[in-house]
Length: 266
Image 1: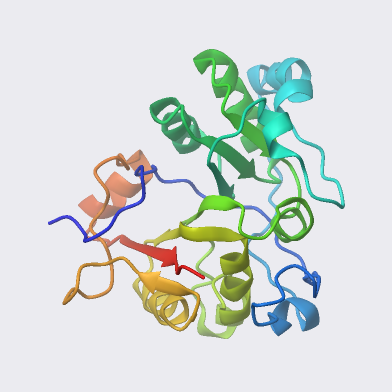
Image 2 (image 1 turned 45 degrees about the horizontal axis):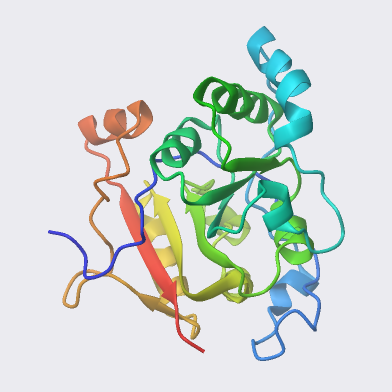
């Protein structure tokens, strides 16, 4: 059964490893929004930066395609229309892993522009390689801290969508405070969405899914798009193909929970 509302496309799964560090959100970013105090007073982390080895193809892609498709971090709003060479709805993904899903989504939805934020260098090289192989002109990569990118380079109310797929679950109870999906961070994310813009999260950890539902449901700027009378989650979108990782988990009896919330009209 389909949900009552769905974003304009259904992305595939990615495995984020992007770091989010303790950064203040400028008070002028959105005067009408509540100030996300946690971003001012404590770290928000969505990753563990792991060493990785780059293959020759990834290294070549970094050298040949990086100058065109990598956007350097800058402490000021980016002119994304100039970056992409057009004005189109933009979707930002926090952590795209090795980039397979991102490349599939971008190929399927050429009318949208995708900003992938990732710090894991082999993943960046991998996505660049796929950009070259697929001739994908609607993807740009920022290899930097996601909070800094969102805070400094993305204007309030400018994104059509935000994706956070399978963030680190920090499964031990004493580590739950390190999870990315926390009330103040979600409040901050909502300021970057245009009215009607979507925030799509997915996880394969049930207790994290429960936390996500509680946190997203508690954000006054967001509304759940799940069908009335449902458990609050949406069915796996048809346009989000199963990855081998997800398919293996499902074969083992693991669940996957998708949540799609929408920014309310101002």
